[in-house]
Length: 319
Image 1 (cartoon, rainbow, N blue to C red):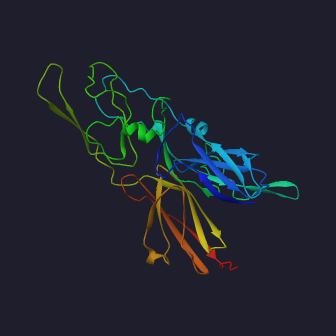
Image 2 (tube, rainbow, N blue to C red):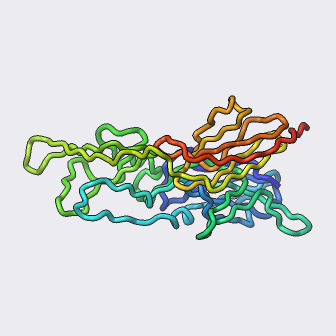
Image 3 (spheres, rainbow, N blue to C red):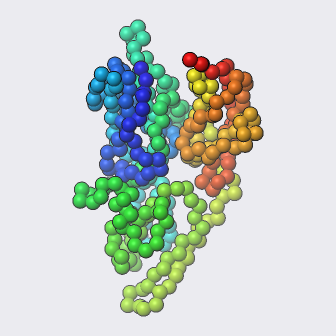
């Protein structure tokens, strides 16, 4: 049995609402007994959905659909900022980056056999181990909902709330009208989201006190960015696509959502990436022995400590 194609998934780097269906659909060959959808959150395996019956059957393909919103919502926490705090707060608990891998199965001597490597969840003492499968796009999920009377595509809805000049990948997360008055002594924050990793330098508030005509500026300077990368790679797995003569690099990282890699025989050993997600595929390689070196990439653009692994390409299948 085999995953033939992914027919429905969020667009790469899109922004999704956690309180809405997040659908992943795929087609398999007929008579596939079970399909698995592994959910990876911030590049780490989190949990699996499994279906034993397709949504639709035809004579040539079976169609399967997964709604992954429940597992994604499990990792979120609602944070209420303190009153009169007077600075900015990074609410990392209200958003995450998500990617899924689809795996199929077959029967071997009447025993169900999963056909790709099975991922393993993390424990208090051991990190998660990624599995195999067909990967979806990587996208952002925000702890948010969209009312029925609003535009149902979150990014389109948030775009309608923009007043003035906004970065194309930055969105307001409030329905406050232009001219809303902030009240002293309240937990009065203006939330916004940005769809990429950034290093903030300063935030300037352009404001006017009530009953005054002139405008003032107040600048908040963020702490200087770190000069090192404290991210680490806790797992590195190399699998070989024998049919294509390629290596599939799969990593598990802490405090990073991207990595770069190098092989001396590929591009003269230059770094490839950054790769957003947990896996990358090498170009077609001739038969031989190889060593791949992988670095976690921090949000400040600095690489962390490398991890290396060796592998062997024995040749390519030619049909």
